[in-house]
Image 1 (cartoon, rainbow, N blue to C red):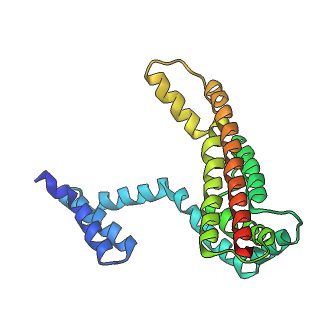
Image 2: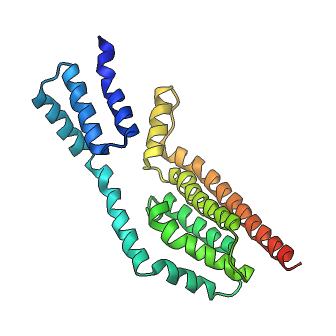
Image 3: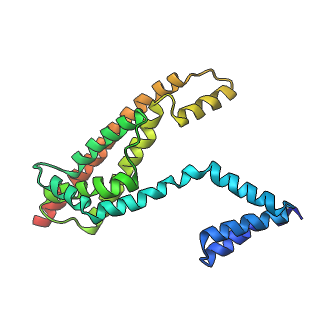
Length: 227
């Protein structure tokens, strides 16, 4: 009979498969699971309410979406692209290299300025596309554009993931230190952060190489198209 307590999983699978309202499916699964587990309705509502209050900060990211919509509605994406397109000798690699440095420094100082939705899609990607088109002298092919999208997203991941542990009070550093202490290794937050600095620097250098190779590949394609 203990398996009946897993009925909530079945409800979620069926509900998502039939494309029912997500919130209604999850709430139904939680309430049904509570009843099967012998919890009274009042306690179920209490658990749901406490869970919402404890995790309410998780929904803050929803505010981002209308902000991005307003940004794109009033043309920031196009203006950023046009501004970069006017700069001589600009290239996608140079734009992404500069962003990688800024993003890594910000992450190392625990300053949150980036994000795929907040920064890459509305700003960095259009600027990189405009720079690539300017250096090419023509529009990008679908394959070149997709490749640039992937690199732009990757740069955001590199800067965030590999540099954030340079900050001693970062959650990742605290987790590592706690795990190491439990295993019998005496390490400090400062020593872990110091060990992360060389990794962050190496990541920046490897990113420079990656975006340089993209620029080089783009130049080769221009020669082939003209030839």
